[in-house]
Length: 244
Length: 310
Image (cartoon, rainbow over the protein chains, first blue to last red):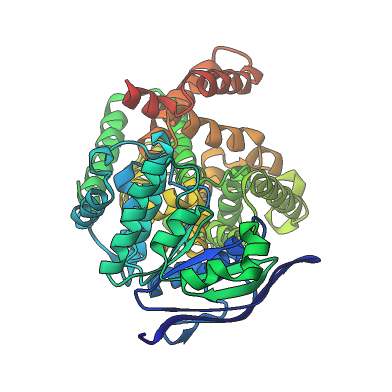
């Protein structure tokens, strides 16, 4: 296995008296597909937020050899950490195409405010939309999209930032089985681009199909981490999560 | 269209209109009324950079306008500086306060940010009322030149030309902001600040640029006000009507486009000037309120949004 892209060590987060994360360690290698599972409230989304920088917690997170410290999210995405949200957060007043222009201009460029023209990113945005199957809806206002298209737009926006790591927070939630397959295909395609993916998900069929490794969080603690076949047979995981 | 071309056209139109009216129009009231309408073009355009483009509603427009006016008064008392310098000073002071407001209210959004801007206006009002150097509560007079400079027939005509140029400048800046990378970042902040940050938008920096720019343009609009009236007092420049109008005009014209505040200011400002000489003064604010209710109900995205939908 190649050198770790992400190394999270003893990540801890408390909200008042509630411990959301307690000393969670997780490493992800370049291009690796990791499933992160756990019951509701186990700290998965909080962990995603800690990596993306939208929540500040304890412990250390190193990415691509750099300590992220208190680095804000907009700088983390320029390093290559993209995330999608559990509830899609499109730029509602913009068209689908313009949604992609934001990361293409801001995350994928070194000095966004010094750029002189706003036309060059259109071709790349259209290529990404074609990849996720939203090409025909490029000029549609994003708030009018269906649930599955919103999910695809979230992924497209993440792809537009040229990520090295994508943290997909419940990217399949609320989708029908066929829609799950559609979105999963986009996530699997990330591997060919060398993008590592942490898939936070409840749909076990999808997680098992997608993941090369699965980590399990329960009540803010990591209780298992390993190959899918081993993890799902772990008695502690069965007891805590799979209802065994 | 490139920004420089647009600015050239806007300044050209401003100069053409100013020259043509100066030759063709004899009635001095025309210049006074037009000055006020153009002043609202600048105010509404400035407000819209923060309120419309960035999504941060500022109820303290009057404070920034007053800062420009009182910077002018202070500078005039200190050095009798020429008008261009007064305008620059007004813009600089209001821009700096805008930057400060941005820093102080970084964590506030929505109604909390709006309340903070009202608080800022109250603090500045109290400061000015108790600042004797600029006249305090009793107000301050500005000595107008007996003969207006640059061959203008009256001070009103000169100030109208200056305000027309400032309006052209403000509109050009707003258009540049809208079509640039900066504008796209501000729109992302308006739609979803966290998603914007997670898409690489440096939200903090952009918000500060927005508050500074918006404040500076409002200050610029206010800087010439003492010369327009030759007298200012705190209740007049901190008037609620500036805050209400600078919100109502973009709302009526459309907040997502630089042209919205211009249309709103020309329509509402023009109508108010007509009504001012025909109906009691209090009806002006009533009219603004009534129009706001109509537009929020019928065309929530203003005239620009309404025409695009059709």
